[in-house]
Image 1: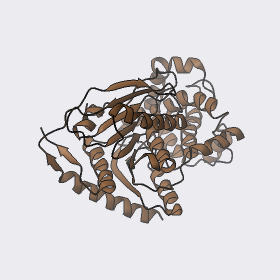
Image 2: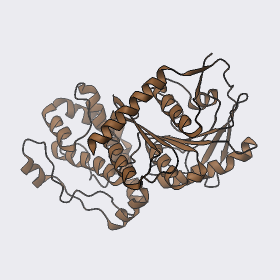
Image 3: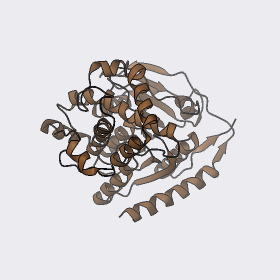
Image 4: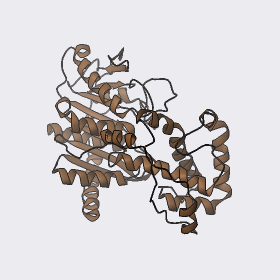
Length: 388
């Protein structure tokens, strides 16, 4: 099964590479229009942008990634790593753009999907007409929002582009983060107070000022224990660059610190369990498994988690994009999702790996190429890349 998955993914990457190399150029760029901000019925903020000239009649909807529960509600992830402003980029391609803040932050996958549905429903009143095609897009938490919407509400969308999302198994994603914290506490005891399933407020409040520096110092001073942590947790870490590796470890711990209490509130209990899990990769696996802290998930939380699981049942085109070295949402989600798609009999999913380290670490060209492939699958027409 894994060999089949790898063959298909590599084949699609080659196709996408060719597509990047030979774009169709347009010598007259559409002009971005002024965005209109509003409030959805749920209370979530909305932003809708329609090109002032050259609108092709299509709409791109954006679902943002995870934002800490204690941050103010606002629009997120609108600036690409190279400084490109996403609403302008989309409009210069001729598409209208729409996004929402979601009604709250933290674990908001289900509510975020509902907010997107509301956003799509109000768009025609703002634009003056319904879009010809509607493309659902999102990254990280927005990637699973995108996938769930494509699976559950295909009547609202023409297709979807899901980037670096936990789409294979949401329970395993929670376990991945939980395992990393549990194992960190074993190899580096006493650094982070409290429990992996219950985070003290002082840790949240002083995370950046006090705890991150302490963590970074400990990881740097005890590279042997750090290597065992990586091996036993199976975390994806850039072992060729110690600075990047320690930053990634701190990033995984950030998710445990800022997401755990919020997730427990929204899932009606603790969803993490490591009962019966045997950890391997340490210098003394027997001592590790005897001594590591163990937790049992609350039944109510496990029941609630089923609402967050994808099915692989896809009836409209879906393109997924994922870096093979993603340390936060591992690439194995793509393999698990492929297995779901294969079981469901769907044939509308194209998975594209990017051989690079880092969470959602794509170039603008790679994202555009993946989106261009989606447009090609939906319309049979190539996406026109503008040129000044």
